[in-house]
Length: 57
Image (cartoon, rainbow, N blue to C red):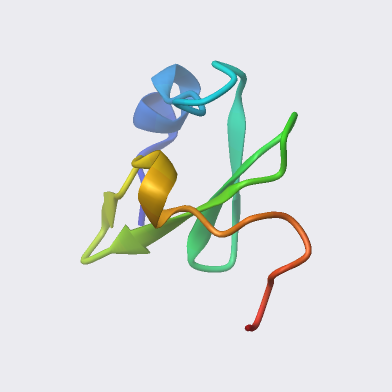
């Protein structure tokens, strides 16, 4: 689980906007990229993100 204080300072590395938690991903509120959380560690790499509309693929 991501700490609420950490979530407040995390931002999408591409567009620098806030992210929110959805299931096991951090989702950018602007571009919609979905960043995985592995072993309770957010993987905030653009190359690791799922593009919007690719959920479940």
